[in-house]
Length: 311
Image (cartoon, rainbow, N blue to C red; front, top):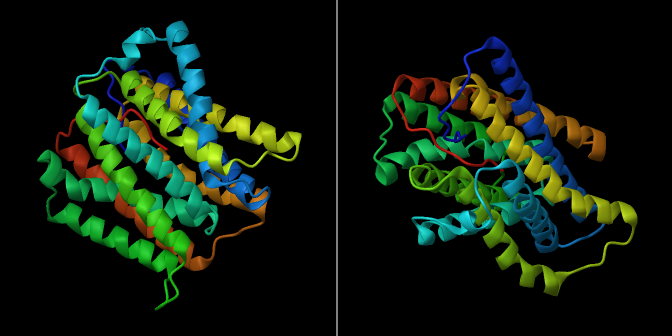
């Protein structure tokens, strides 16, 4: 996954341990976000556009309130970008990723969707050559191919029997991969908080009419609270994620992104009674191993820091 740009990190062992703990906690928040989105659709029948917009408006509101308090930027500074068109394209990709992922969650188990999402860093490595000039060697190309085979094995699609959730999830993964490539490029021009702001602002703006026309009033207090919690889960998760990268280098914390497979399986079992089958576990293991190997290879070649977000 892409790592946020930062100029100061501590080398103290205590800070590295804290960074790992924060990364695991951030991943848990992201998994809770996906679990809540799936539950709101499956149990309450709330439309995906309403659920996605609730996430964006909640996180956007929190960002507007908290940035002047804890950040070095004012609200007016959040609008200042050197590449407005690219920020808008990137933000549309973020919104598309969220909607497509929430659609996929209506058909697939949590562990299945995260297995496909894990392909995104491999696709980024594959496309970074023609788009960013960061060409992958044969070892990385091999790791990418193995990762794709792992997803095919995990999903085990039959002829003429491809679950529509797989198509939604693959589309979400591709949108997320292009989103990460643009994030990596934009990191050299705009501060991370500006980039994060545009993602939430555009998602809120574009999603408002879609949510309005599809709106279904939540039937009880629990549904309202879950809907309101989406922005909180996403916002706190992002804050923990960024803070983890400020405390430790990517080589320390990035491998723990794969903890999300464990948290997704846990939430899937606790909330929906789902357990992954052997094919999904083996396929996910192949994808994770490919991703870790690819990350190891990229550490040996100097690559620019990137990311402002995950999820």
